[in-house]
Image 1: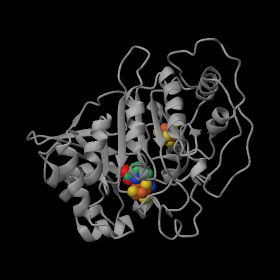
Image 2: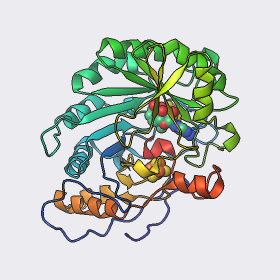
Image 3: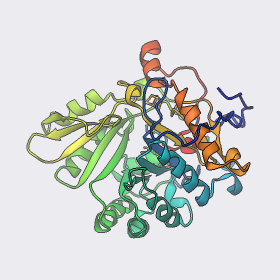
Image 4: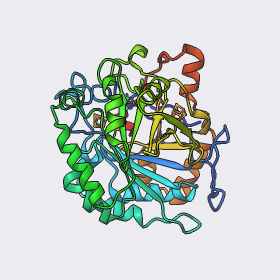
Length: 371
Ligand code: SAM
Ligand code: SF4
Ligand code: SF4
């Protein structure tokens, strides 16, 4: 394993440049980790900044005027992002999700999407190119994102009730504007569109059934996410987690549901469909039912640090490799070497050791690592 590097800030840490394994010629098409999990998904954080201050992600008390966001030159530029993406695609990545922070804040994002949309898998296929957004700028940007080649959109939406929504996003942002963004996304040709609702008991759990009811029979798929202990700023407590089993029960009491087979291994959401044919919902049980066994996802932070787990305490600095003049082949070998030794399974261990309570490790903020 690469040597440890000094911690940069309370919430961010990274490893020094990974020792580059000897180049072995052409990089293998598929790279599996120590638990035989292939590298298939890459999430790329485009910015650590956000125009929201969601209580569970970037609480205002912590992410305020004193908070040191990354300087502009620390961010990977579009050429660097595309270069890394190409290397990961060469290792078997099929799906790239752009996230953040709020990815729509990144200037000229459409140019990056155009660049990524041109990448092809080794067998000549297009990538599954997706983006997660808080939806605040979607009304203006949906069409240009679609035109640039974005395939899929996920929009976060924690409540349909305006006052609950304004309270949860921390900046008094009106829900109506996000709903306009959803309309624009449909008009631009996106669909089906997944909607992420982080459920926090006592804050928005009363919104579970109204959310399900509102989108039943539409092309939108609400997904109810268990509030997670990511980062170190949200003051997470297990009693504020609403288990997915309870979410399903509460919805099914009003609108009967049945389980659906998952689309593919590594899918984070468990799918349920309405018995009357009114579409489906998803639940993401990151706390009560870990899915580490099928975790095929790497994360690239805004400044080019590779994390092999959402809950990692440290990552591996690929930006230094790129800016230090390493060749694609050398970087590809480094990435393969890092993935091959990966044995992360934080959620499984949390469940086994603590019965759900957060394990006492220092963790990276979600807005930095990319949710
Ligand atoms: N800003 C964009 C957004 O909100 O969609 C993209 C980045 S955000 C970090 C990605 C996803 O992470 C969002 O759907 C958000 O709800 C989710 N998220 C953030 N903090 C979370 C937490 N503590 N538990 C569960 N999900 C969380
Ligand atoms: Fe911003 Fe998304 Fe985090 Fe909310 S969840 S604070 S919108 S990055
Ligand atoms: Fe993957 Fe880490 Fe989450 Fe487990 S805890 S599913 S290894 S990101």
